Every structure is written in C-alpha cells, then in structure tokens.
Image 1: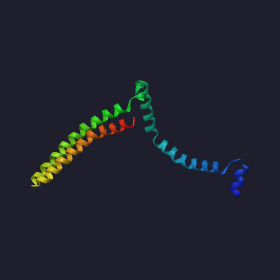
Image 2 (image 1 turned 135 degrees about the vertical axis):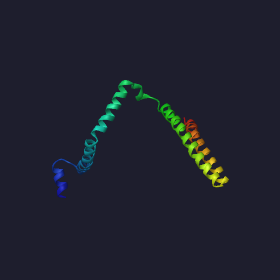
Image 3 (image 1 turned 45 degrees about the horizontal axis):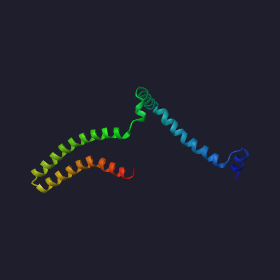
Image 4 (image 1 turned 30 degrees about the horizontal axis):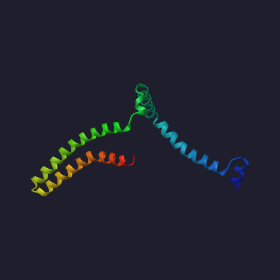
Length: 131
C-alpha cells in the first residue's frame, strides 16, 4: 500500500510502474546483446542499405520468383544427394542379398524426389482454390 500511495502521489499509475519495470529488465539484456554484436548488425544494416541503393527493386521483388529460384537450386542439389545416397544404399542392400530392401530403398528415394518436385505445385494448387 505504501508503494501504491507513493506512485499515486507521484502521478504514476501501477500500470506505468509495471511497464517501466518490465522495460528496464528487457532493455538491459537487449542493449548488452546489441553492444556485443555491434559489428554484425552494422554490417547487416550496411549491406541492406547498399543493396537497396544499388537495386531498389529488391524491396518490391516478388517473393515467389525468388523462392522458385531457390527451390530449383535446392532440387538440383537434392537430386544428386538422392542419386548418390540412394545408389549406395541400394547397392549395399543388393550386396547383403536383400532384394526387397533394395526395392524399398529405390522406391523411398524416388518418392522423396517426387515430393520435392510436387510439393510446390500442390501448394500452388491449394492457393489457387482460395484466390
């Protein structure tokens, strides 16, 4: 009650007091984090500002086209990972005499590649339903 009375006398409400207390507890760790990572954030800010000055269309670029470019690169890397890993696993199964395991390995890697290619198409189709 004494604290409440002092706060009310000073013209502050309890909500303002709680907000100031929370802010001070949040501000100290945030300030120390920003101070310890100052070079990183300055570099990121400088890079972003430079990118926007050199090519301002980046700020308004279509995220779908950038995402599709990234997906194409990931699929090409994923394809070769699947080819190498799938071949190793299938040959290992055949050498162990497990033909059923080799078939399962082949089908599972094939399905994985199909999902990589088919998932964006499926999501585009679902998005088209709601447009």
